Amino acid sequence: MSTGKTALVISAHAADFVWRCGGAIALHAAMGYQVTVLCLSFGERGESAKLWKQPGMTLDRVKEARRAEAEAAGRALGVHDLICMDLGDYPLHLTAEDKTRVTNVIRKVQPAFMLSHSQYDPYNTDHSYATQVALECRMIAQAWGHNPGEKVLGAPQLYLFEPHQTEQMGWKPDTFLDITPVWDKKRAAIECMEGQEHLWEYYTRVAMNRANHFKRNSGGQASGRDCHYAEGFQSVFPRTVDEL
Image 1 (cartoon, rainbow, N blue to C red):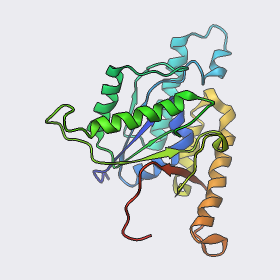
Image 2 (image 1 turned 90 degrees about the horizontal axis):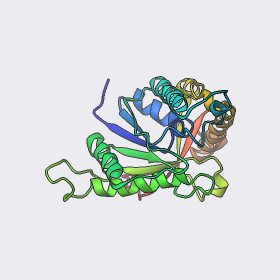
Image 3 (image 1 turned 120 degrees about the vertical axis):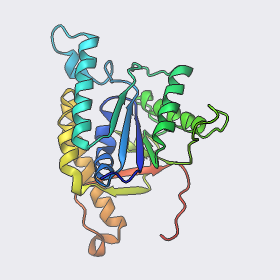
Image 4 (image 1 turned 180 degrees about the vertical axis):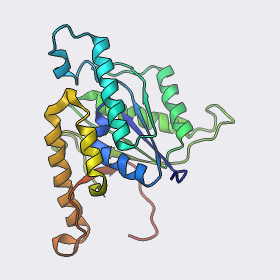
């Protein structure tokens, strides 16, 4: 049942949302959130090596395969709306018109919170660029002078999901989310990403490691809440709470 609450994921490539925040998507979808995933590209050039090794492969066929994988993963996670902008990758680049489209999505969704990549990624600048775009378009969506008369955006938290090599990215998690109840959904979504099968077990281990951190930070191994799979996030903006 819908709660009327929404969330928005801005993913550089078609698979990123699965590895890095698939659990958060599935968990909030199960709570009644309508979660929109905006994929800026399919990752067709730089993140589809397995597909390119097939004889006679073409760019259009790779895109079709990646779209199908993302759509299947979205269904497994309970994504409300999957939007694929098909802007190209390696490098990812948005024009002013493209950014207006992203801003329009943000205003339409009116998310309670947003998710995107780490702010620094020397291995894949598409990732950090996507977060730069997310921050810029979030700012524009808050501006009363942008398309006056439309409902402006409030101030949703932007959570940065875990990058592939955390120690190189300056990423420091301050939020751990227990995704144990929906792990089967995330694993099913992971297995939809046939073009990157080499990452299936890697991101399963990441979730298990973060579960250990969840338990440690929920009160310690002796009294902390049990958890088998978790995801970590870094908040960009200060959080305001009534109790800790």
